[in-house]
Length: 293
Image (cartoon, one colour):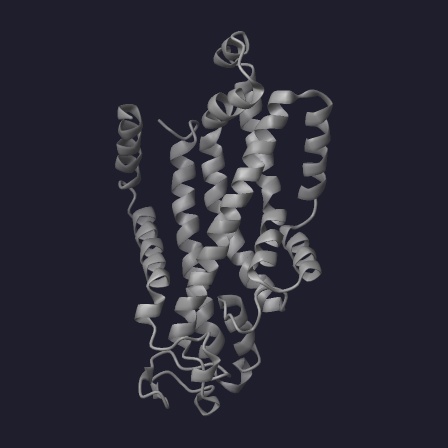
């Protein structure tokens, strides 16, 4: 525990020397807090269709609606308060990204490290399947799976996991292959210990740094994929306004001058993805021994 705390303090000490990643991490934290406390902050529940007033639809920022409060970012075509819809949309984006990323991480790490440990035909078969999947764009795989399964959170998570777990498998396999022939693994095999114990307690923990880097990238990618699928109409249902759906709903009004319906959700999405990527880049630099001096 002391060693873990020492490494954590050392990691944070190095991390805080770089102002841009620190600001990005602060932005991510603020967005998470806004998403978690959205029901307390948002003046309107965008999921409650009975509270929507069509006469308030497509109103400019600053409009005072029928509910008696000011729509600081305007409203969309259904009369939703855009500020409220963005907060709830950020909530969905983070939920989908973190949950899909965690499941893909668990599956990919276990499959990749197991393949590296077992070796032989099993390893060859698994990695050829992964190579085949990685030859297709992630958005194409996610779109096909989402279209087959239909709309809904569970179906969308399955689509995101299916399109992303291969990246974790490839990373875990590469890291675990390097660990497989080290002395501590050979010593564990001589005891003997079970293969499951060796993989989960010896190989996988030592292969974790590159997996953490990939995880930060894939969370941002999952958020982007979710927004893209919702924009294309195969993501979440219309009753759950994710950021991608908000952008899609306002796309038809761009040329009419009602820019806020698409632009503001798009800005929120860009800020979230950019902040996560900046944090991920710094984590990658610190966990990459070739960059450490």
